[in-house]
Image 1 (tube, rainbow, N blue to C red):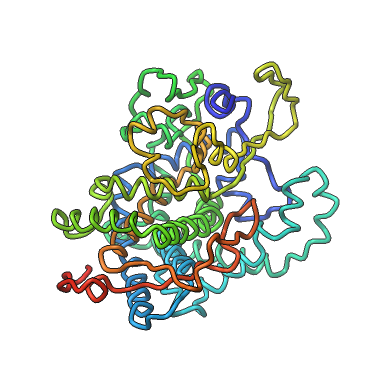
Image 2: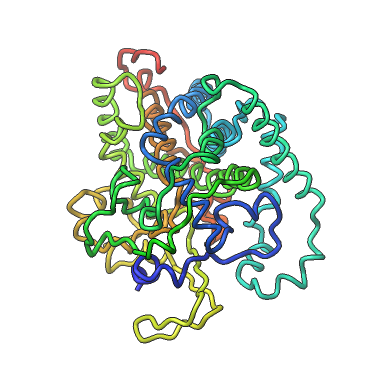
Length: 459
């Protein structure tokens, strides 16, 4: 049924549920765009997340990872328990600032930086407060209540980001092309006049037809179907507007900050309380560095066990516990009428704990994600990034920054559970799945703890 909704008959479920009191730049971001406008922007953005473009992001992620390693080194030297989730929050903030906003920050050591301050304001206002969850659950009552929502601080925050990006756009236009910084913002600016774009059947980054995004899709296989549309309905190769560029940069904050920091934090937590799995990760990482000087988009794909560990962390703690689709027309699904105008909710969190597909679902077992285990399991019982044309467009970038951070971390350090480590973790809510009171662990230098010869400096 999920495959039918998310892939085969996607045209009846194109839109996400809309929060009707959002304002610019949020109204222009991909999460909230609808119908033909969403298709056009997604068509232009999808090539910006191709393998070739991800390679260009590696130097920017490396710079943020350098700051992360320095901060973790201080925690290792102190020997004290610390909140590693907060540390990863600073790292993902640095990545977003660099990749999406062309701004270099060290948010852990410079919390008063204007970008960091306004970003924190955004999250203090964010969707994860109880009143916002109420509006998400009952969007039809929202319009009469809009006038009662305080918005001065929100408007100041929005205007800061809009002004920042507009200023950078102006600076880029005055620079020679060869001097322009290669970041996601520049990729979007390039897309304003580029003819590069893809049609609907290539929007799915979870089950792609390969990295050659302009090639025809793979043959129609049951597990990897791509919806087909007449060419007249495919998105036109139109330019992306400046407002939409600002909106897509903003979606990095909305969709990329907490999800990536949560995944990094939960992965380290699970490895701290499962030290035998952490040893396997470190062995794989050590072997990796006998072949490579530093991680990049291509070589991190060799880290098969680390990938299994991250996949299992995403199963136990999915970025979104549920997500929704609007029903655009009356539709009969498996004998059940879904009426036009209703909202269909997809329970990713429930699916990830279904014992029919995941024996002992509460346990951390990375081997659930061996190639053989994945091939034997229905793909739609695991939806950390969604599926179909409206899945997470930034999935590759998220996976890249997570793997690049972890491979360098476990080369130098071990994460150790301590008396401050809460087992099990208390979560904020069943909707966001973030840790309620942080993730407290200790971190140790591997060479000092294990009596090994010092490893070469981490570049």
